[in-house]
Image 1 (spheres, rainbow over the protein chains, first blue to last red):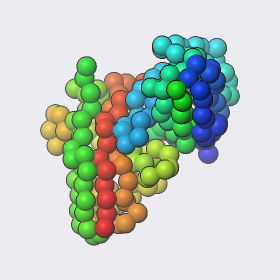
Image 2: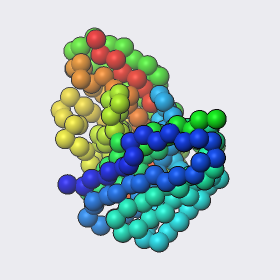
Image 3: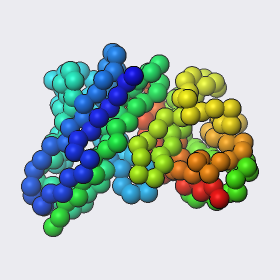
Amino acid sequence: EDQVTQSPEALRLQEGESSSLNCSYTVSGLRGLFWYRQDPGKGPEFLFTLYSAGEEKEKERLKATLTKKESFLHITAPKPEDSATYLCAVPSGGYQKVTFGIGTKLQVIP
Amino acid sequence: EPEVTQTPSHQVTQMGQEVILRCVPISNHLYFYWYRQILGQKVEFLVSFYNNEISEKSEIFDDQFSVERPDGSNFTLKIRSTKLEDSAMYFCASSEALWEEQFFGPGTRLTVL
């Protein structure tokens, strides 16, 4: 069964304290990996798509990387407005289904 | 910037009643999806829709659920006889192509009493 596991489930950082979130996946034939941000009571907001091992993408303080078994979301010098739940997801099943991880709830303290 | 919209934002219904959740996907997108998220749990895939038919569905999407694209812009999810456990946030999403990023709407919070 396709699985997406994210760690840690919760992370509390001081403003400016860099860290990384992990997403490990088990899927037959990776067709891409997505990172989303979700604020409380809102829909997931698309951040990145990664397609192949070694690929990296950046957006402001966020950088996503991909290996053959996991992806990392690096957050450099986070600000309080980066506080959110970060979701990792992969196409799975017949590939139109997308399987999400439980997410990492990030809190950045001023 | 184009976005997915959903109505209503919050729906309260009695157990056993039918509800219809509405979505307007991004206009040039071809693939449409419904997901649900029970409070505190992960986002779960319900169904995908392409070329006016269901292309994939999960085990959650049983006979109580149906989807329809009644015109060129709307995409609906119907739950025929709601149960308490159907209480959740329901998200609509759309994508331009297969395996590309999906863009999500703001969600409809469904409360079944």
